[in-house]
Length: 269
Image 1 (cartoon, rainbow, N blue to C red):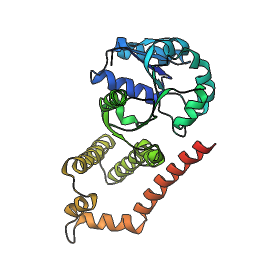
Image 2 (image 1 turned 90 degrees about the vertical axis):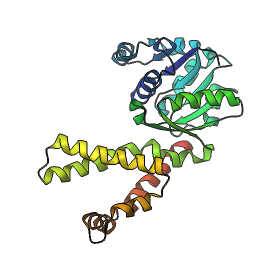
Image 3 (image 1 turned 180 degrees about the horizontal axis):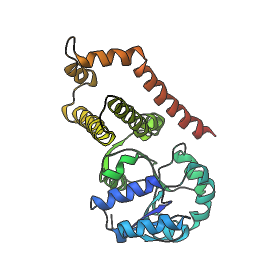
Image 4 (image 1 turned 90 degrees about the horizontal axis):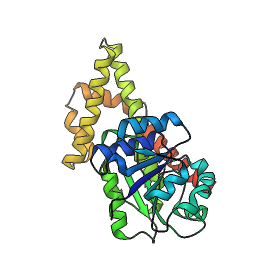
């Protein structure tokens, strides 16, 4: 695909994370990226940090060959009608909003478009994002590959059927928040036992990062890796027993399922 502008309607946390990831990985130069946002401070911050161009929604829509819709789901009904007459027919429109199906976005555009739906997460900001992608029939294989390549520039990317997107929201889209909550709780326990808080955060964060890397790189089942740490009569199995008694796993399952259910409810509204 020719080297043309990658546009972002909206410059919030997720858009900033994606822009950062794309530019840091060298997938696009700052001059090829353009963003709009009603908040002038956000626009200025992105210009200064990454050397991108900014403009209003119409200017970004007109200029972009790949156009990310990075606004809240609730304002899709306002933003898309504003830009739809300025989006070229060959532009690939990428939605990153929970609860907005490919068909819902198509209806808002009032006709057929090349539409891709991506559910990323905020670790894209440090090049460790997880993105799930699906596309409508108007998107050619090489166009899907191009967008997946952008997603891989800031982490991992998988192509899934759209029916899996609710599960994706629960398992990776929103789960950094669960991980941060767990990390904070681990650090609080260390502080309670006398460790300085900055050191507690470092120890907890590296333990979580390393554990996740073990799953990805060894291919071993998480239960097998857990068993490797739990020596008979040791300290770890004591902690695991408490987590089981307090319903740790069932709480996580219920939380992720509730997240997926909320995504499904948003889609129906």
